[in-house]
Length: 158
View 1 (cartoon, rainbow, N blue to C red):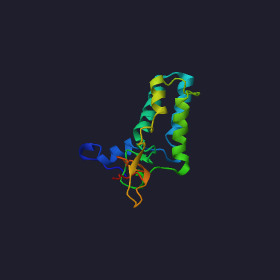
View 2: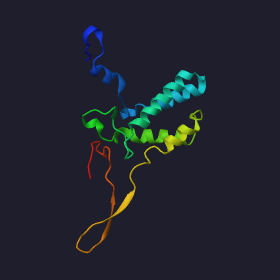
View 3: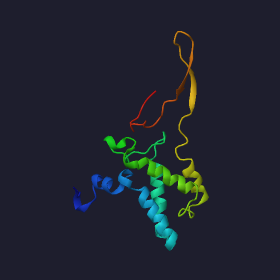
View 4: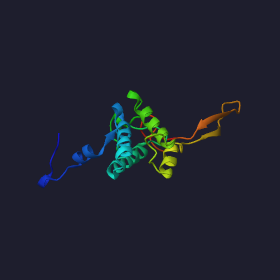
């Protein structure tokens, strides 16, 4: 349902409806594949620009722990959670791998972008050793707490 503000201005609700997107149900990654094929055949800049915009969306939407929410920008409901259903995340990861490897039809993607998509999500925390007292003085491996949304898509604290 669209709501018009005074004098026909677009409301915040309308802005959200116009600017968010999803990776669920094959969305976004399949459209990027299509845009790449169309650009490969036509060489029209508008298709490359649309592809670049969609790819930037996927990179921006990724959580530091490697997953993607169902919708981005984030909403306040369950869609903040990492989306495993319908091969949503797998489709995005396959697309990024193919771009990173310069597979057809992604040969037009510049080297800097290929490097960037190959390293998307690799900045997640590395395992660290922490000493924990368990009565025996044993050492246990632990992970640093994520500073951004965890696998549920919600912020966590250490």
